[in-house]
Length: 317
Image (cartoon, rainbow, N blue to C red; front, side, top):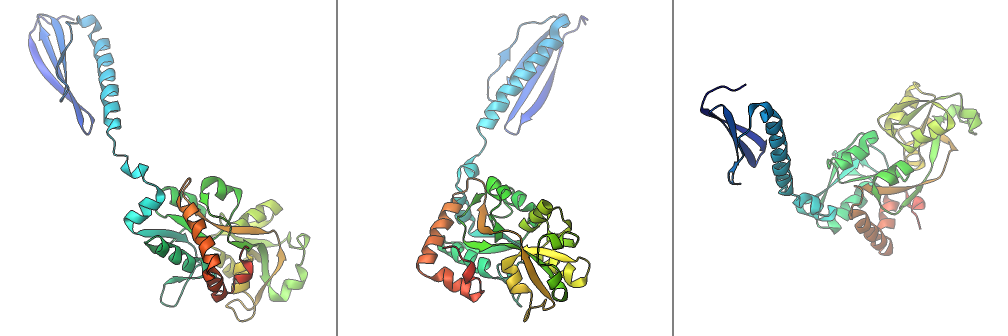
């Protein structure tokens, strides 16, 4: 529709934090003139456009302008953080954030609330070797990959079994400990459960996302997933589950005579596996840790730390 009017109005559209587009919408003798004025980009005058095609032209104009300037904006995005290696990133912030769960003898708290254990001590030593401090954060084991990718932690160092899910989603160190998944039952019932077939009617507690849960699924066992392996032990001690599946290293430290679970024991070994440390995918920290492992084996410091927590027999050769 021709208006028979003459006038002008301006529209300003913010398309990026650094870019705005101003449209002068002018009516001159029943025709429209559109002036596109991107800030800092000069003034572009478009020919008179009759009303019948103005909307199509305006939409096309806006789309082209938005796409063009948005691409310019994206090109100016600060990618300095993305270009840093993980080692540089950790050194710059001064901390190596280690994701852990309560898992003696690998990671657990002393009476003062400090994280100790074979893994915790080795993580602190590694952090010191690259000039930073280790900071321990208790995580939900089932969310460990998300925690890594979100950079709330820098590594998972917690007796982590090198299963396919882990190795496909993380940059992993070389294996440093051998392990197995074992069945925990009350000591007075241990004689009844010495084979895989004998345990199939039991109810189990397993840590969510753990190798123990993987074994329970593989064997078709009836199980409840809990937050940590220590919680699985509590379930058996309380009688709410018949049995648990946990790491053999934890079983050796946590159940039997002289432990807090003297009335529990372990019987059936379900598999054999290895522990490794996980970093973000493609992280250069994994290679750095492998160097540290090699050096600590050579100078005897890894063996000494393992002896402190009675896991020396599990060390890989």
